[in-house]
Length: 458
Image (tube, rainbow, N blue to C red; front, side, top):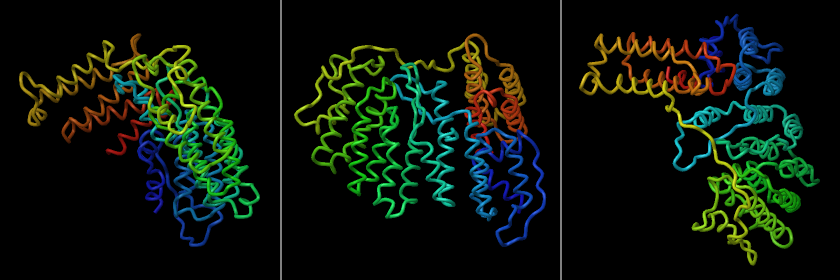
């Protein structure tokens, strides 16, 4: 039972693989036959937890969460303690907030930002992990889950992003978690006495980034059934909207690409009188202040272009104060996103050219599956592996750029090579490269992305 338990709780894609192959051999001791809630977990669970404390925080936190979700751990106090330990450990996670890449017309996603975006999709940044832990705590101790959310107070520390940034924040999960906790942990009396609305209020009042707008709109929409709550939260939102974020990279993304206006429109449909008007005015002020300030050059409104669709949508409810071109023309033009394409350095071009020759041609003919069993082709693969192993960063590329490009080549080569000894050789070389890579320490989230991918295919 112990080994199966370890495999189940480390079965976040890649965790078990990483746990076994790259850190240490794990010894599992004993099993338990107790049917009641034991005061102390079985030895094999204690060994797993102890071992998890010696690995990267991102992985340790995931293992703690999985252990607490397992039926093997029956004692609720132990579950809660493990989650508390995991929550504290999120402070040691390298990436604090999830980020997503901004698609820019004509620009490839085969860039560092593109691959970093894939890595962030794993949701092993600190804020995403905190969201998961709070939801698990909620199952055990609703009051503690409330306290965790209250202590955060909507203060996410999101610094403004410059136009050169190709990635923006995504805080959707934590706002959804706040909504779940608010739904499940307050009594009817607490709601009627205004305690819940005070719990929610900081998540509206402390908006400091455009990335919070959509999640905040959705949170308000979730709690618009009770008049008192709706009016208090909508008044707070109206105040929060009247600011210049000075972050056009984030602002334009949430307005144009995320269509955040569609999240806002339902809020005003249920409000009338001064409260509704105040919210509409706040939204208009939000658009004017942020569109008239410094704009990233790739977001600029051209003189021959019609108004952005999110402005036209807003005009549909702005009544006698619609926005015109003069209201949205930027007073200052800023820079654009900087994210150079991969495969442009001398070494990268050479390695890609040799890879294509290896996989798509054999002499003067397209390569066949039969060709891949020949001694000549096997020798060419081994020579290529040797060249790939020797490729290191030079003046044209950073360590992370080389890392991503090498991983891509290893992965595709692994897919192309037929099953057998040569495939195992490629696999061992790839694993050895991951195991020895400095990216484990420099950027765990990027490194772990490839460990995840390799484990899920193994």
